[in-house]
Every structure is written in structure tokens, then in C-alpha cells.
Amino acid sequence: MAARIILKRNEERRIKSGHLWVFSNEIEKVDGSADNGDLVEVFDSKQNFLGVGFYNKNSLISVRMLSSSRIDDLYSVLEKKLMNAWELRKNFYPNLDSFRLVFSESDFLPGLIIDKYNNTFVLQIYSYGMQKNINLIVEILKGNFGAENIFSKNESYFRKLEGLPETDEIYLGEKKSELINDGLIDFKINFEKGHKTGFYFDQRDNRFFIEKIVNGKTVIDAFCNSGGFGLHAAKAGAASINFVDSSSTEIENAKHNYEINNLNSNAEFIVSDVFDYFEKLVSEKNKFDVVMIDPPAFAKSKKQLPVAKKGYERLNKLALQLLNENGYLVTSSCSHHVTKEDFIQIVTESARKADKKIQLIHFNGASLDHPELPSMIETSYLKFGVFKVE
Image 1: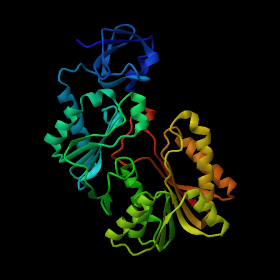
Image 2: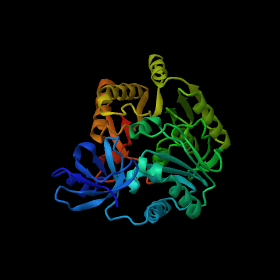
Image 3: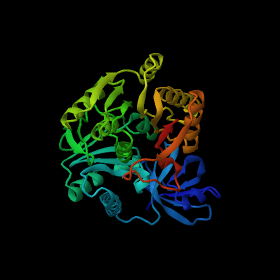
Image 4: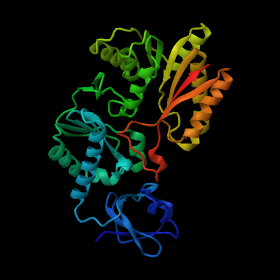
């Protein structure tokens, strides 16, 4: 019989509204014994059943809710949730073989991310319970999805918070490179050297949007990674593109992806710190028509937020100073702790300091394979804005 987690008075409200985390300071008591990763039943202070989740006594997130009903067969529950996630993606991307298949809490599979690259599945596991039952996930991916390669590519920061080993594993096949297509552009994915799971699927839809504003324009793709935005700009007829990243590996990836797509814009590939590069261009009074910036998260925790805001403000100010009249700033933040309101305010303040007038043309979040739970603000993280500069 599963252990019972009894919540303190009124602490059930968030769970009833659809939030999937029970924090350690919300628990009144634990009836029975439970090891990390075990399924436990959760009750409110009046002994009303709330659902079942994975337990971790060593984490601030003590329970990650998996179901509002009792679970007799965990395999069937996981299989149904994975199939639901698959069907959602195929509605939006019926002709694609590569996308984010599972986005953890947003797909009601807390602590599990799965990116699909053809028949290679790359996992990020940040829940003790998911790690403990990873063999079931592997079995489903093999049996239902024809997986040939399954391995993990975790971020140690989140593994550490959960008390999990900071190591990666190969569960099936091998860690070989893949050639994927995002619907327009081919990308070679190097899993050994690439960031995250190998590719940023979350900006896919936004890369298509920028094609509307780049034809015949001079463009910078800063923090370019494997070249996603710049490659789409080249495909849409940009006159020139400067690909900029501090990682020589990512610049080599971008260059390779440019070549395999047979693109013919005037392209430069520059290994540089983006702040340093922008400051140099500003001092030289260089101007461009479109500047695209997609930096890494500047704030991984709330206490880093003040410094992060200053960093984003400085970056956007520099980008705005590089723009011609009627140019476009394409700017992003993937820091969860920076809200949409924060982000708009940061860009607005950057424009004031750069003495520029701006119009917000388009605003979006992550691509359609990254759903959000309205009841969990933690599932919303990417901000993407396109601003026209007067």
C-alpha cells in the first residue's frame, strides 16, 4: 500500500487548480514509509484524496503529481500520456520526424523531457520517480515509437536539485549524429558537442516568422548556436548574415548547416563574445537592418533576476544602436524568472536609453511542441518579440 502524504490546511488549493508540485513545507505528515521515487497518495488536511505522485523526501519539490486517480498499472498510465503527447505533436507537425515529444509537467509527465530526432530519442530526467521507472519509458519508446537510439543528455544543475547522479546513460543503441529537417532547413545534430539535447526546438515556429522581415536585408544572428534563425533568413533571401557565437563548435555547426542547405546569401561566421562584438560594431558606427539575439538564460534562480535584467537591458540597447531606421530587433529571453511584463519593460527601457522609438510587431512564446499549463507559471519560459525601430 502506498504511503499517504497529508497536506497542511488550505495547501491543497494549488493542487486542485492543476499545479503539479507539492513542496516540502506544505506537508503536515507522511503516513507509512516511502523511498525516493516511490508513488505516494496525496490527501488534503481533511483526508480528501487529491491524487498520486512521485515522492522525493530530499527535494524542495516533495511530490510531483502524476494522476488525479489511483494508479494500478504505472506502465499503462505512462503509455497513455506518451501517446497523448505524440498525437498533439502530429496534429501540428504532421510531416515532421523531429520535435519535442514530451515537455515534462506541460504533458503531465513531471520531470521528463523527450526530444525526438528521427528515430533517436534524447531524454532529460529531473524527477527521481521518472529515473526510477526509466525502463518503462524506454520500453514504450521502443514498442510504440520504433526508437532505435535512446540516451540521456541532462543538465547537472537540475539533477543536483533532485539528488540524482549527474551522469548520462545510453539506454538503447548508440549516440550517433542525426540529420533532421525543421520543415524547411536541414540541421546536422552532434549530440556529443551540441547544447541542451542537441537542438533548440522551442524557437522553431519563431524562426519561420522572421522570414517575413529579412528579404534583401542585412542581418545579424547573435548567439546563433547551430544557425537556426540565420539559416531561415538566408533561405528567405537576406542579403547578408553575420552568424555570431562565443562557441567555436557552434560556429562550425552553423557553417556546416549553411553549406548542406546550399544557401547563397553573403555569410560571415564569427567566434566572439556577443557583448564585445556589438560594442565593437557600435564604436565603428556599423548599421544593420535586422538584429536577432537569442541569449542563454541569464537568470536560473530568482535571486539572479536583478543582475539578469541589467544584462538583458544592456544587450538589447546595444542591438538597438546597431539598427538602421525602420530596422527590426528580434529578441528573446528563455529565463523563466523574467516574465513577459519584465521582458517588455526591459526592451522599452533599452529603447529609451538607446534613444529609439519602437513598435511591437509580434510576440510569441515557445513553439507548439512546448505547451504550457495555465495553472503552472513554471511551464512558461520563452519570450520572443519582434520590434520595429523608428
